[in-house]
Length: 69
Image 1 (tube, rainbow, N blue to C red):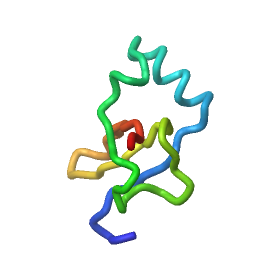
Image 2 (image 1 turned 90 degrees about the vertical axis):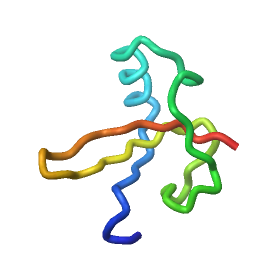
Image 3 (image 1 turned 90 degrees about the horizontal axis):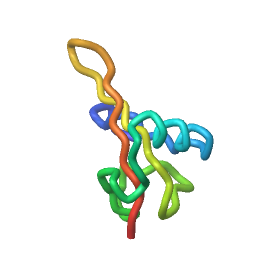
């Protein structure tokens, strides 16, 4: 993990379901991140939703990606 790399965490199934309902979308509509991306946390598998926390001068912002092949 590099100091400039944003924090990546795998969402639990319950958290993913809440996120899908909040934005009224389905899993294939999420932006994608490849399984070979070195930033992925250990244990990530295809279909997992990854929360990426980016920080800037205004605070922390969350971005979500679904893991694909």
